[in-house]
Length: 396
Image 1 (tube, rainbow, N blue to C red):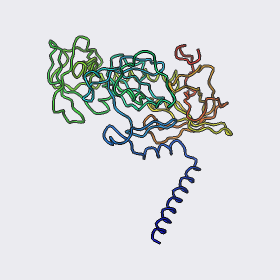
Image 2: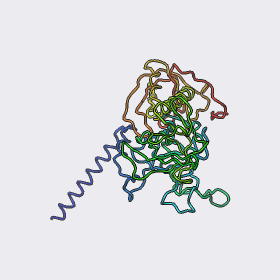
Image 3: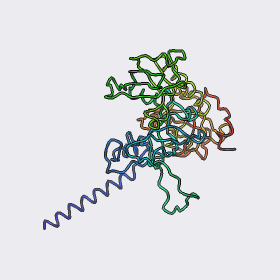
Image 4: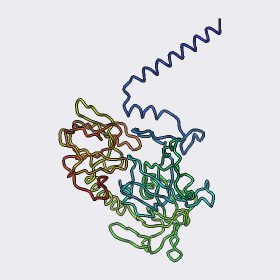
């Protein structure tokens, strides 16, 4: 009898679970709701849960906070048009000597962003050799029936080469600024090419000093002027960009900023470079909802753009949209675009890659590419939709 009661309870619980699943299956889940559900699932992170699998990206969804894997290294190769590149990863204790400095290829996600000199940037803005800090996700697994292999011997690559999908890259300037980290000068020796500093993060000093390399190629910025190594004095607080980190000690200083004014100037210049690029190419986002009967669509803008650009988008004014691919390239934005009316600007919960800005628009015609999970670029009425260089267009 007790067994029958126990079986009955189990059956009742099973039917209850099935009923909940069926009811959920009929709910019109939006992308935002799907992201909330995804965020509740546990996954491995850099700080713990090593027995759990790493988070896997899903098409049309932004990843949850803290789900990416950190990798740092120098930018040694770049295809700025297709938003791909190669890093020389920093050396770590997890690597054997034979694994040092092997290339790490990456592709920026559609919603992946870069920061250079404390401002939004594109790959074209970042010089080769710049040390970068990145957040990466695993590449899509190869199809089970895939048997194609490149000719010749297997190419040796970074031990973490599977983490090839990049959501964020930032130079040392931007990384330290975000971490509230600076360097205090303890000693300067131009003759030996050594700069001794102590790292200070949010007011707390490192236990040990750091020895950077300096030389005649190191650019020094002081106020609104170009300085020299002679301007470095003990006790100063500085910001620096580095190269050949771990390959040649902690790194070689390519640029040093000695004060807030010089840092602000660097940021302001990069900000203007970014604004011009976005006005010419349009802000990128993906379509997350289409109403064919009403002829409207909603676009969530990707993160990484200067918030001031949003001010040019005005409700009830004209907005232009063009279809783009995952590398954010449009086909021919002069001809393959549709204008319409911006009906609404919504604020949604931001997430990695998600700016938190959602726009509802009504183009004069819904193009084939205006579909959920597809990428588009948007221009407000104040921006001129101009032609792009041939190499940047998908339509040749």
